[in-house]
Length: 125
Image 1 (tube, rainbow, N blue to C red):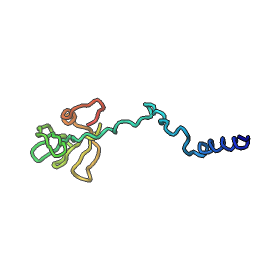
Image 2 (tube, rainbow, N blue to C red; image 1 turned 90 degrees about the horizontal axis):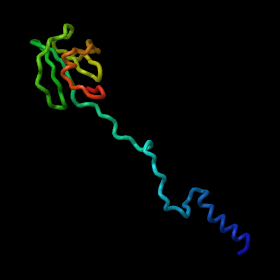
Image 3 (cartoon, helix red, strand yellow; image 1 turned 180 degrees about the vertical axis):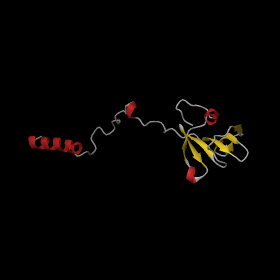
Image 4 (cartoon, rainbow, N blue to C red; image 1 turned 90 degrees about the vertical axis):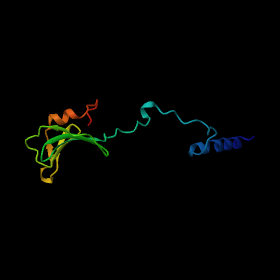
């Protein structure tokens, strides 16, 4: 073989690897992904249960709703600033007054409402 021909064969063998084409080691497995780069588990979901303290014309009551299931209502003392038809809902670590658009606002969570919901490690609810 002539020196020019061997150089040409060497270049022909190395050229596909330089262009990103297939090399002779095409069956090599991809590098292993380190555990820290692995995709994490699904993000946490919001709880489906909502806890309420509602005021009717006769009384105030605490109850919870989980999708379509409503728990039995428990009678409780009424907060002085809660009007008939309004309710207070636990939203995370705070509470929100609902019922009339002009009075929809964050409020201090009543103790009866906080005692009615289960506590979790992450403080959800």
